[in-house]
Amino acid sequence: MAAADVKISGYGRFGLDYNDANDRAVNGISKTTITSRLRLQFDMSTETDSGVAFGARFRAQAESRDNTPGGATFNGARFFVGYQGISVYVGNIIGAIENTPGMYLETRTAGTGIDGAGFVSLVSNVNGEYFNWDAYSSAGAGANGVEVLYSTGGFTGHISYSTDNGPTNVDRVAGMVSYKFGDWRVAVSAQSSDIAWEDKVVASVSGNIGNFGVRLAYADNDGIGKFGLYGNMDIGSASNILVWVTDEDAVSAADVANGRNDNRDGVAGSNNQEGTSYGIHYHYDLGGGASFETGYRKASNDNDTFQAGVYFSF
Image (cartoon, rainbow, N blue to C red):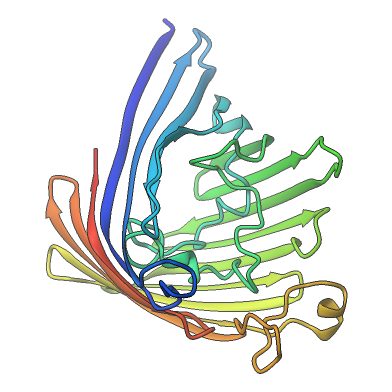
């Protein structure tokens, strides 16, 4: 018998964000601001008599940062059809790079603090060229692509493709494979893009050593390498502390001459993002789906942030 289902879920988060890059006299933003987000997620699915699943997802999200209030918006829809371990998605796709295990921090915000603190912790974010891969958009239309996922046992494979049919006619193609064995998982992904500086390869190894969670990640971001080392441990029954460090290589002079951003230290006009970033995050479980989240992050360009707030899911 065919079955249909509609689920509503989501989360809210709010807190304070200190960012020493802000300056009321320079950019009109206070160094300490309120950050908040409310997300509602709608998942709809049905299954045919033969066991083929069809479904869709979209979100409504309201977000405020840097003292700029934001109203709620709906994002682009993602559709899927699935059967016996194979799923095909179209529309606002996830993207193979984005779906790589070991990309994000093992925190509720997937980054440092209450809103991710710019996600400097990702090895795929370098040189101001952040999030230059296909990813499910929570507040926009997304990539408008197609992707195929296949899982069996500990293996997962993912291929994604998107195209821009506008005047630029640019394409992105990406693939990812991962394998989980025991407490460990390895993953490798790659993207080829018609847009300059977007080709990348990402690799990660993550697992547990006793009570400690550890992860090593590396990305070649079209010539800029970045390493990341991550570790976390439970403290008692309700707390977890996570620490991380990354190191970003310098861009080549040839790429800069061809118009790429310059991250090299001590160079006029550079964003100075070459070098080491690090951070620490603390989580305390309040029960009932709520938690206290706080974190400090120092980026390689000497930008300091500190965030603290409450996160609750429903």
